[in-house]
Figure (tube, rainbow, N blue to C red):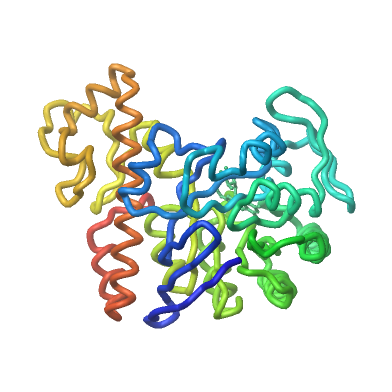
Length: 369
Ligand SMILES: CNc1nc2c(CC[C@H]3O[C@@H](OC)[C@H](OC)[C@@H]3O)c3nc(N)[nH]c(=O)c3cc2[nH]1
């Protein structure tokens, strides 16, 4: 079961503690993505020492490989992957709908072909809840349709209505409160449909509510407008999760509007292509300008990578296609995101969030700049 306690707030921003079956996490929190049950290139002890206590995986991937039955038979997901903190699984509501003609959507559920071996499968709202409960995740996302961008108003309306019917079926399918269940708001980029979906989803007895269907290629102003419109409409006392977000600047803006939880592949995926996060913006370690740069990635970072290695060395490793390049870059980026969330929580506790946001944006060079 899940307990969420808000400890302090500053405007709409709030900080709290989320307690689940396998531990607790402070919010606002960022969840590193462990798609197949591991954070790519980083051991759990580094994930923990950076301060993370909740990670995200995906029931769609785990079901296809190694199989949810296998995970259940070896004692559940925490035992299988060796992570003793909180685990949230997404439902595959994003993946299956991005399989194009490898997927057939019906009222019952979705028929799809595995992206691994082309085998045929079927997910229904009930099956997803069953798999999430059986492998023992702390928080399970419902099967939804992540409405694609762009979508016509008519499509977005039909899609949110189906997601709502599926949400009710998901609630009915629950057999235990050990696995908390979050509903997901859709509605495309149409404000009135977003408000409708937020109301329908908030009225159901979910343990938390997520804003879905964003960070899917829509203009940034749409993402900001919808987040600022919808987050405050979600139940105040329940965790609010903005799926797939995101860039450091996007997380800070969403926290300001009352969002508590985030996930994104960015810290780990960008690390693997040489993009490193610093408090002054992103840095591409491949650039020749770092060839003999003896400074750490970020002089204000105390991660293992920044305490021991120079930009010159990290650039050399990356150019040499060394495995350690991926590992050291990932350790840094994950630590940066953990520090971003830690400083955000501190600022809210000290009622200094506005000042923190102003200082962040005065130094951090975003992609748009
Ligand atoms: C990136 N932007 C974004 N991600 C999103 C995800 C997670 C993607 C899932 O894919 C993997 O990361 C890419 C993760 O799974 C390993 C994550 O759970 C979403 N999931 C659901 N169920 N519904 C949504 O409306 C939705 C919207 C998103 N927007």
